Length: 226
Image (cartoon, rainbow, N blue to C red; front, side):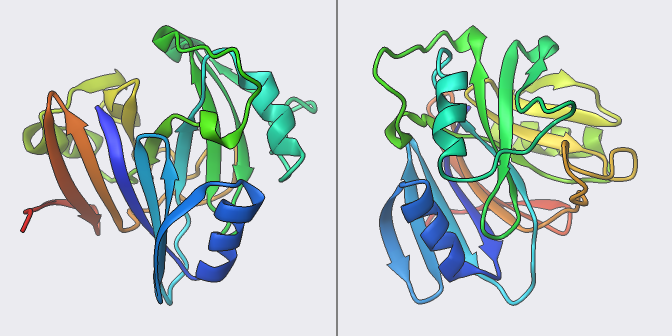
């Protein structure tokens, strides 16, 4: 599964545009009075103006040999979250992945991740153009099994790893929905940000089929094209 487009809400649209286009350096490919979009590899990330504050967790995929180089690059631009004992990277052994975290201008917790199973190294020095895609988006839920089943029926995407009670994942290593039960896992690691079913619009490509869904109030709705 590939996340081709992700739309999130923000109450700090101007600050977000500055962060993503100037601090990180993504290319702005579209802008209106109440939104902007940046190119992130094969994904498009859009933020839309909202009066209400929403806090999300999402993740960017980087080449499998660029963890520490990307960390040094990021630290020149934005503080990186310390996990514990001064460490700034974390290993997910079951996922065969390493990552690090930072906050954007809205206070969302973003992540750069390397997935060694994808075996996608590059020899060039790390730049923002090496970010391959939006790799994960978190969907808080009170029913992991039910949300996973709805995603599978709607998008034909598979359950990946985790469990169907506390924290599961749906999709593939190229693109994942994170499905935490906010009653059992109340915050996004490694922060105190509450997990809630915030509004999200996602376009995914899986097995040659492109589909768009909206996630609102814990419910998935397919968006029909045209």
